[in-house]
Amino acid sequence: MPRYCFTSQVDPRHLDAYKAAHAAVWPEMLRALRDAGWRNYSLFLSDTGQLIGFFEADDADAAQARMAATEVNGRWQAEMARLFVGEGNPDEGFSYHPEIFNLDDQLAAAEESGLGLPGADRPER
Image (cartoon, rainbow, N blue to C red; front, side, top):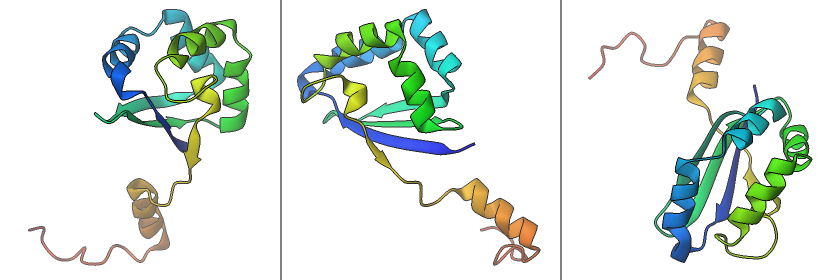
């Protein structure tokens, strides 16, 4: 399943409120994310407000569009908007970043190729 990473900026003055909201996400929002095709979704937040998100979906654009069409997402984004830097709904301002490395994918490719891994015959240190 394809993996996606995005970044955004939470206003550093609102870090505690952002964390509190995500410690108790509305059950209907959780269901909407699941039903829209979001999987293995995680958020990471620095003390400067940099937000990094990761999720898996068959199609990120389709999953995002399904979420945008839900009433609960509209309410959630309206609640979250005051916590972010900039104007508009936070989910419309995500910057997506391409994946350039994945350990599991490269290990699997090395094993499938029959070439093995360099140093596989050496004991671990």
